[in-house]
Length: 423
Ligand code: NAD
Image 1 (cartoon, rainbow, N blue to C red):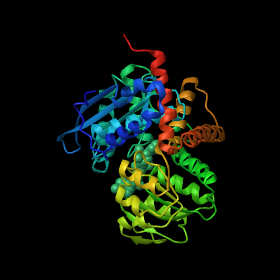
Image 2: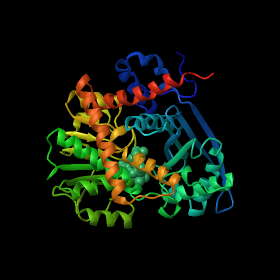
Image 3: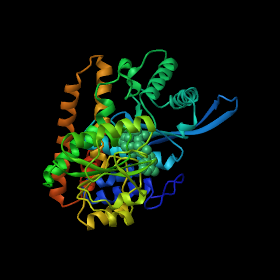
Image 4: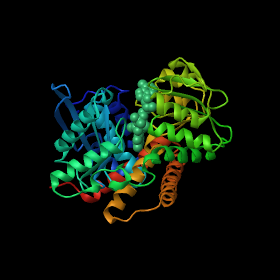
């Protein structure tokens, strides 16, 4: 089969990582394996130019993407990332992981993702709004409540979703709340959405610990990335008796053997913009983060963090993937050799898209649920999905990652086979 001409992945790059995960699952797909090439190609990839006038009068151009990896099981669904290192290859991988995640949890979606190559910290609010609105207009030809529904990811939030919703609505001439999720509550957002990914990381971590006989009380937990996902997961672990002994973010790494006072740390980050300078812990070198003894290590920042070299050094029982794609294939192989359980991103961080699904459903019915209803339904859906993945792993004696891919790819390819090829 010819390779794609527009991407040349290396083994440990995001798309290379995804392709090796598909290679690993192929033997477990039975007769559906004849369709597997579908998963190695995005259905559709759009690259857009985003010109805006900056506050100083100059014209700046940014590169934006929206990739729909699969629409086989339903509309596309996946976040939008603003980061200077975003590439088409990265967005392709993130969109493919959304296909797998949505199918692993059995949400009625395909997989998609978007991004803009920019550092939002260099833009004013007005400039950020212009970039967001122009990007939304450019990708407007492929998104929509029934086509593809964006959501927040790294460096995007409820305000950006509000601008996206407004721009799309203006273009189609009707308020279309269901075009994005992760919106502010007054615009059709859902209670519990902001915390949902971190909450899901905690819920799945709790389930994995229970099955591996790791006590929550006093468990040592370290978190890389203290944004939406990492900070909320850390807060929930601490509230349930665990100790957060190390945190790393873009500003630095801090450690406290007794466990941080979470409220003080959250207050510090809200004011200072990062963990560096926090008085309730000691600063350590960034690379030493990977040597700290833990029961649960939560990468919740970016891809490619747990390399083979770092995997050799980890002292942990469980790697709980809050970020998407934080472990390289070489890192994964080392962790498997060393008997460290990896709870893969496609189930560990699926809480966010699950509550996004609730938000989309609530928007269609214009009937909103209480936060308790949302949290109970979230817990039930993702623990049920995790149980199925755990049992698949035991049945085939495979990793939780390959098991999650087995469950998900079986669902996607079964749908592919039943729909048949058009024309
Ligand atoms: P965020 O922007 O809120 O936070 C990102 C965090 O990572 C920040 O604390 C930042 O300081 C830190 N960081 C950035 N570069 C770093 C580096 N080089 N070293 C250490 N830390 C660094 O983003 P988020 O929404 O919390 O997303 C984090 C991860 O979780 C991403 O992989 C994202 O794709 C994934 N994820 C997010 C959601 C969601 O709902 N937000 C859902 C599923 C998965």
